[in-house]
Image (cartoon, rainbow, N blue to C red; front, side, top):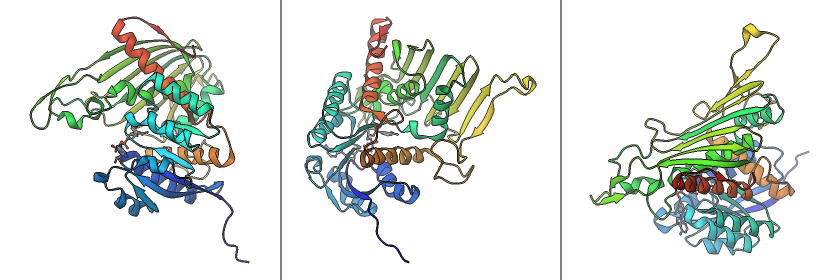
Length: 387
Ligand SMILES: NC(=O)c1ccc[n+]([C@@H]2O[C@H](COP(=O)([O-])OP(=O)(O)OC[C@H]3O[C@@H](n4cnc5c(N)ncnc54)[C@H](O)[C@@H]3O)[C@@H](O)[C@H]2O)c1
């Protein structure tokens, strides 16, 4: 008997933005049906939208989108579209997400959810009153080693948590001679600084491991303030290029977080160490398949030490359908796993959290960043919502 066809529900994707993230997400949607036999829907790359100068037509042809446009509103208002995937510059997120929710589309929005906590709060309220799925793009939650770290913490393997140290380090701002237009966190309509750009990922990672916190103390700096534009004109950087946060988790643990764009030599280093009463773990995105784990094991005290676990075995989280052990995954697989989760939530009406980042998670990241900034400005510790 030769069987043909399938009954999976088609979900029409409207991709807004086709730069870095639009490309990563489009690649993920195209890959997901090839990897996951349990997928409960059929994602269809229906329409892509982007600025004319960025050539959405060429992108549509490359990825197999059926249609393209320069007008994101046309995609949001199109009754054929089920999912709006927001890969646009950060200043557009609030307006676009509100319009998409108003049109009753499922929404996936890249981080940071919004530019301010007030804007993010508005999106949380709108999402709560709309019968759709809304997810925020904190992709690092979907790397197997990161997920295993969280499972070990939640299973109590590390005991009571004492300290969560995390940092997100890049070097994009370290060179004072780099023209201002090329320094993304410090130029243009959205000057995120390191605290809202890298920092939103960092805060989410800390919360994913340690939960909410009652207070934050921030210290921020702009080390490279004086730049030149390509035409030689002076440009004064206002955004921070270094943000440190000290947080008190509700569990009692302390968090030390650093987000910086002036970590000379660091291209994209996200690292985490958690110390508890019975063990510790350590993760570094530069070796993304590995989790270092120390267990205070009394059975063989002479063998105590950090073990280097390659988190690519079948029983490991998120590894069920990927390659055989030690046929390693990379950064992109976090995005693929993340969007698979989103599609499942939409098609099978499942909850985005606790593994996927909800709009509330996006709001928390915005709140911590904002309060850390105020703390740094005023030189005082600040209470956090959720504490
Ligand atoms: N999760 C991650 O790993 C990660 C990494 C990088 C960026 N991001 C986030 O993803 C989002 C997008 O960043 P990016 O690096 O892909 O940006 P990008 O500059 O590479 O691409 C932006 C896209 O938006 C389009 N665009 C811009 N203005 C528009 C408008 N008014 N109407 C329609 N289209 C418009 C552009 O044509 C382009 O296709 C940002 O929120 C960013 O912070 C996330």
